[in-house]
Image (cartoon, rainbow, N blue to C red; front, top):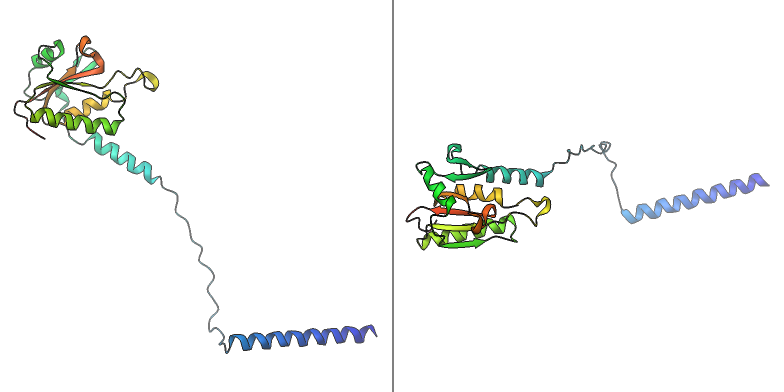
Length: 195
């Protein structure tokens, strides 16, 4: 009796499976067998990650650092800092600037500005004063006393930016009453006009 019951269940299962196959075949319609077996999925080798933003930043820093070449001979040592003069500008010009011989005709204060905003402000300031025929100006960049590590953020940048400007013929640190090492006195060439 158990054998008969098992045989009956097997036939019912086969009949149910046949009904499922028939229903499936009617649902999808006629099909053709594939001629070739499907290809195995391709194994994609992922490339090593690249720090693209850091590469862009490094390129920008390099471009900015060599943006305008200037002759190393035009840098003069004055105390522990550097001053700048264009070729053909005498050493006495820097000495007179440093002693405050020329009257400062205009100034710009960069305290609180970030690097990009300070650079833009310096460009606009130099363009304006040159257009107005001014020759001697002060740029206050700060000493960095409120900066992390008490290092002036703009101090080194200022020297680089100013050396790149064609209208700038010389600059040096201001006298102590005019800001000392937190400011630069800049001499512009005569008739510089807008840059």
